[in-house]
Image (cartoon, rainbow, N blue to C red; front, side, top):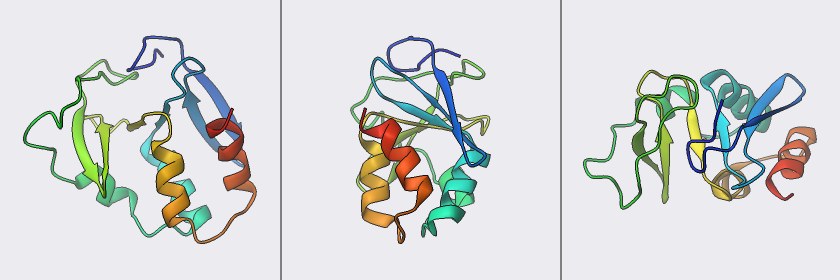
Length: 126
């Protein structure tokens, strides 16, 4: 799979059954719905995966260029989660987090700092 932001090949990184696709060039992260659900449960996040997948897309492009899903190459929808604008596959394959977006969300919402946060931190703060 290629990065929807810079077209670099994404690498898979896994720990505790949570696998993320990561771009070493632009530091973006692609999470599929199952991964997001595991992270949400592990960290006791307040935001449900179904909520993320069911948010209505932005009516405009939210001032960002369109990106394509690394799994199906369809143009992703822009969705707002708080003050973040994320890219979501219209076929529900997953969500793209630009560099810093996932860490911003986790820093604001993770109730516990544990092995999963440490693992994601290793990726997010390389």
